[in-house]
Length: 416
Image: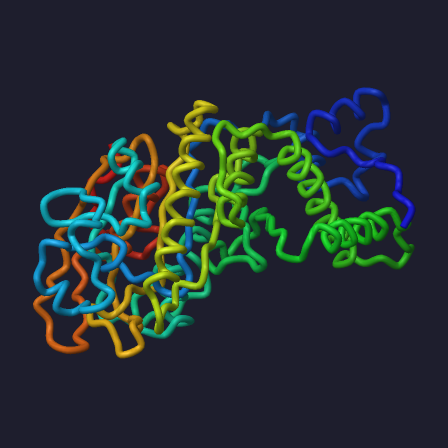
């Protein structure tokens, strides 16, 4: 397909420069992205780029917390895990009771540097063990008997970002094939999906098709819906072009592992370093559903997680951006304390959650789980995950957690 000429402004500055040359608003208002038009009309400055940024890291499938942060000094752990249990000699110790799985060298280094807060035994009352329902609960921030249609970050956007000046950058960027439920909101907010899972060729074909459609003259009978759709497509195209340019030009300050997860974190770092004013990024690492032969599989995933996050943090520090970024992991549930006959673990309840950044209070937070349990008995949570959300919303994102979560939750002390 012959490339179409690039007639479109791709930044606010470029749009204003074109306007100054007489090309003007009228030349673009039919096709130009709404953020360019409205901000140019109002002469609104770009939003500040030093606002706190949150990176959500989903561990999809339900990570086994007990073989991630290991209570090696607890005899019950070894009783419940006769084959999966990690021996004390192999544990990367955090204190005299707990330590990391040896595959978590990256996370352990972060903890030693004081850049990783480890929140123990995080869950909620009356937990659900279904992947889908549990993911709903974690992504919406609901109670187990409450069904919400918006995500907790979407409601944060509604409450703290609605009515803000037209923004050249999306509020949320997800590196997943589909928009995460976390971003679902009542109001319209610009979000953007950045995923290479369809392959570069497919992505280029889609972009070429999109650009061709946008250059097609509008018909006389084009209605308001078609015009809105055209503008939305234009927004997506401009953002895509800008994102790809920033990623291509980026020079990382750390060597990232050659895993898709680490490369996605590299892309996040490039957008942050590129000056995007995006407030929340969403990255996912899957395959934690380890019912059988868990040992090697989970170890590989934990190494991918830890090495990727360590490279990301080092990269941010090299660009002097680590003060602006907080990363938080979550998984829909932990696994059962007792291993099963397939040398795996079944769906359980609570698990540890990690908060990474230079402004966290590093180390272990909360009490270790009680493992004095009968066969197939589940853990009882110690920290409600909505306390974690409330702390992040209030103390990091400078939002209103009561408005977002529907009630007040006692904050935690993991942000310095």
